[in-house]
Image 1 (cartoon, rainbow, N blue to C red):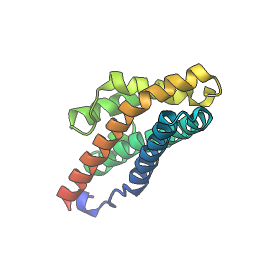
Image 2: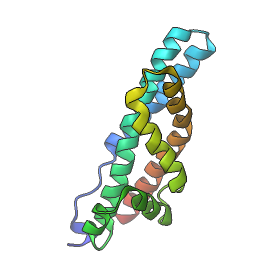
Image 3: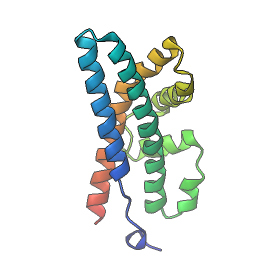
Amino acid sequence: MTILSRPPLDLTALRNALSQLDRALEFHERAAQEGQDELAEQLRAACIQAFEFTYELSWKMLRRYGALTEPNPQEVKSLPFPDLIRWGCERGLVLSDWTAWMAYREARGTTSHTYDGAKAQAVFAVIPAFRDEARFLLARLEERIAWST
């Protein structure tokens, strides 16, 4: 099966998730600037939820892209997560190396404990850097898909 006969990669879900994350961060920032602390706290929770979804879609889209473009799709499908990130980094698809992604992964693993204010703040602190990462990944995937069609 050639790359042209494989189904295209639909980036709509990642695009929408990233847009939701952007909006949540904007609303949170506005509420915080206006001194609406309770609203800002609720919007922080929305940011964390949007981060969870965007994070999951990001690495899954990276894996799907690899499965669509590599000569041996099963090889990419079976890569352990750290190796998948390294694979993406080697191909210029991700902005940061495994060290940064490990921090995002740890934050994602903490999201079920965000009822703890300190943990919620720790997760929230990595979201802006992750958003840049997700934007970079989406832009690279869009470029590569446009180039191959």
